[in-house]
Every structure is written in structure tokens, then in C-alpha cells.
Length: 141
Image (cartoon, rainbow, N blue to C red; front, side, top):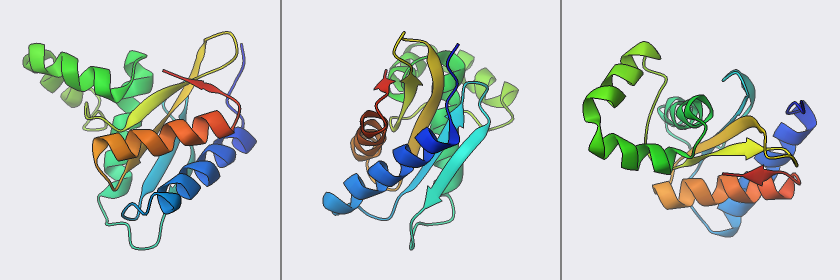
């Protein structure tokens, strides 16, 4: 099984921040987690508000834990809100089913982590994560 390296995580962060600056989005925080939901790397841009880290981590934590993008989780939460409230409690508040995070996959399609962002809209957050993952030569889902 492939594991997400620190070098890859840092490449994701660098490219994600570059995409956010290119698009002139508000200051972002990007979190990259490994396959077990542990923090691999974080970038908090100057001016990013204090909640950005927690939100970005919560989106990524949910994505890697459930094996799908946080956008898909947000859609599922609409149909089963009680289950998702229970998941949030089970995850001690680290689970946030809102758009802005995607899973990171290796060349074989195995999930090796997730990247989540906070600072813009859900679409903007997701966009910068995808740009970072692609720049690192990895796949997303």
C-alpha cells in the first residue's frame, strides 16, 4: 500500500495556496491528512480567521473517514441528518460534512489521505484542494 509522504503533502499545500492566490480568494487554511485521519501538513495563510483550521480539518476528516468527498457527505447528510449528527458526536466534533475536501488516491485508486480547505466558498475550497492534489501527481475523489 502506498502512503502519503510529507513531500507530497507539502506539494499539495504549495499548489493549493498558489491556486488560491491566482484566483484571488480570501485567505485559506489547507489541511492534509493521512489515511488514518492524522495531520500530515497544514498551511494557514496570513489573514485566515481562527476557525479556518478546524473547519478545513473537519471537512478532510469526514472525507477520509467515509472515503468520499465532503461534497458527497453534505448531500448524504440532507437525506439522513440524524446519522450525521451522530457521526459528528462520535468523531468528537472533528467531522464536518460540508463541501471543501476531497480524498487523495494513489495510482491504484487506494485512498491515502484527504485534503480540506476553508476560507472561500465550498466550491473554492474544493478547487484549491484538487489543484494541489493534481500538482502532486496524485488522484482525488
